[in-house]
Each structure stands twice: as C-alpha cells, then as structure tokens.
Image 1 (cartoon, helix red, strand yellow):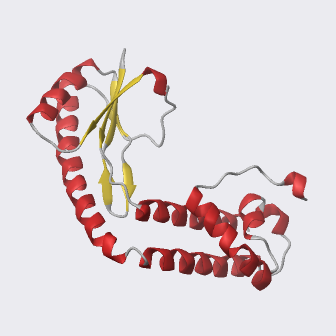
Image 2 (image 1 turned 180 degrees about the horizontal axis):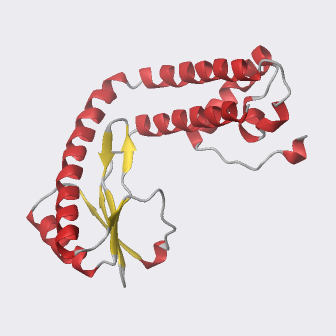
Image 3 (image 1 turned 180 degrees about the vertical axis):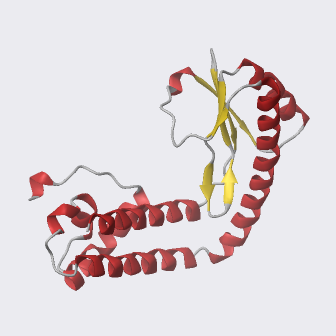
Length: 201
C-alpha cells in the first residue's frame, strides 16, 4: 500500500496540522489523515467512510480555530489592512478594465496562467496614486491581453494583474504579512482536500 501512495506536498501549516492530528485521528477513525488525503481510493470499501471524513473535517476545523484564536488581537489590524487593500484593488481594477475596453484589449479572469517568471517584470505597489494611474495608461496599450489573477482572502481581494505582451509585466499590490493568512491557507488546503475525498464516495 505504501508504494501506491501519491507524492503530495503540503504547505507548512497544513503539514504541521497533519502531524499534530495524525495519532488522534488514527485512534478515533482507524485511518491515517495523511493516507486519506494522499490515497483516498484505498478506503473506498471502508464502512462509514463518508461519515468518518466529515467528522475529520470537524477535527481539522477545531485545530485551526484554536490556532487562529491565539492571534485574535492581530486579526482586527489585519482585517483593517485587507479592507484598505481591497479598496485599492477595486480602484485599480476599474481603471484597468476601462482602459482595456477603450482600446479593445481583452481583459480576462483566467482560472490559471502558465507563466515564465524569468520573462516578467514585477511592479509592487502599496497605494493607488497618480503615478500608478499613469503607469496603467502606459501598460495597457502595450498588452496583448490583461489578466486579473488577484488572490482572495475571506471577502477581500489582493490585486495582481498580468499585462501580457512582448515584455510581460505584473502589477501587484503589496500583500500584508501575517501568520493568520498562512494559517487560513493551511486550513483551506486540508478542508478542500477532505471535500475532494468525500466527492469520490
């Protein structure tokens, strides 16, 4: 069985959660959390598998919620910064959309883009001002298309636009640095993985 297991790498917070919860889940459900995430078909014949995985999700939720509780004071300042960044995202995105429409340049929201980072110039900004507006006026006309590949955190967007052309350029709003974001990402990663498992059965 071990040789059939897929090689899947987890983010640091997801990996830490797996290591912390592994023995508890193994004892409660007679299943390995790591195995169920990396090789779920092994358990397709196990009675009550869907119910067990649903309960595992609750264990994962409880683990991450206890971690997030340790950063309760930081959460308020993070949410304030995310709100500020979301407002900047909306302003810049509207400008890019309007300029793209004016020039007939495709503006897209792709699921993903296969990128060559070596051929990219990345511009990271902290706020929206006249110079950023002028930069957009220069970037859009030289683009074959513009792609909004912004990231989401809760209900907030952190702006990230790719201007594809002879020279690919990326305009990015500087994201906040907080362990809460990484904790939330690890949480989402494991819950999404367990949701994918239940969808198989």
